[in-house]
Length: 337
Image (cartoon, rainbow, N blue to C red):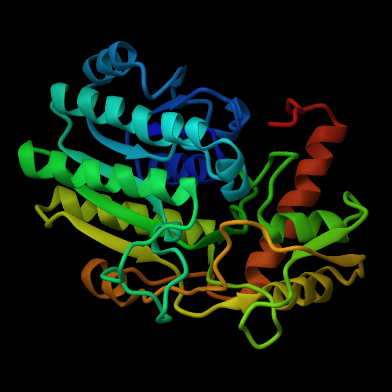
């Protein structure tokens, strides 16, 4: 039996593929390479270039490789882009997920792990945010993910397929072994962008809004190291394989950092200064998003390994320098995804 990882050549997906391979699992990756890179996954792992919404293709993969579990990462993830082009997000994130689920049910897949987001909570009134907090997304991105959560719960009630929904808070950092990291030239993740500014790859770093109801006026987020996030997925898969109940889990540390705090951490760890400018708020950005992670810690025994902002920043810096070396040596394909 094998695990199908959709979006497995992307940032988080590639880390998951490496971890599964390290654990001795048979893995197959499905990725359209829009934002993913073939070089980011182990050479021993089969890569199928295609769409999650292609039912015939996915059904064939499930049968050919005897897939019994799917970890679904493939999605569009930029909140402002979803506001500008909502239909593209509903098509890629929701419609394609529906097709993938249909293929999974028809193919007899037993476990399904879904990559969701804290954006389903919108601008919560109470922080930290528990899994039972009312779901009021502020963007088409959040709505597209929530729609998939609803579909998955309905499918789980109607068919013999177990599921875990993992709601990510802000994912950052890179594989400490430098096998993968955030690699897109157009990435919008704050730590990635700040690291690029520190290394002279960006002339300026924009801070979107300083008038939020927070101590320093900037947004506060719960930053989780990408390796800790993949460990959470592995724990969720083990939970389902052992007969655990369908469940939803927050993936965050339970404490947040403001935009200005992240900027200071990047300056401190890198030893470099860089220019920062204030810009207007972006649509769809809540003031504070911090996880209540008690459920995943208690039910799955999840214990973070890299729960320090400076460590996350250090690994992001290590990866960015390594990525620069690979690009200069032309050892990887360079493109703006």
